[in-house]
Length: 208
Image: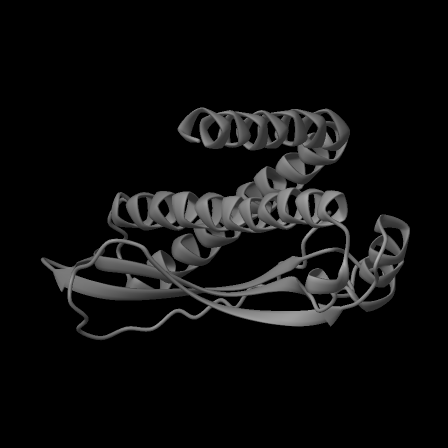
């Protein structure tokens, strides 16, 4: 379940308040139908968001834009980074199953487990992005002074590209690990869900 991760780089000078890296997110949903697991799987492959880099569709996706704003300060003939602020704007795309009420209990249980895992996966991408946004802020603020702001701006640009390349690599590594462990993770989640159902049924019987 690879993710589409476009980036927007903006370098701006001016006065902005000091703040920690921030992330804003919105959710949208694509509808799927189906009464059985094979039908649901087919719908996910047919209707899921398409990744531009591969042309393949996936059960969910997170599109992100990084915006970097820099304040430059000139003192004693040198230029320094007065403040750096990095924000991430994320759009999370998730599936919404329309035929839940008509499906069998076992199918609903498996879907609930799968859909929660899809959402957890996408929100993990957001955590990775926020961590790297914070890293980028701190790295930019720590850049050494330069004789001119033009030279420092080049350092800012190179640093931004380097940290965001690290972010890309971290996101891709996360997807690879998640893909390898998908089946074992789903089995653990389903077993846990079954244990919860059995425990609830026992409590109901004991309460009668």
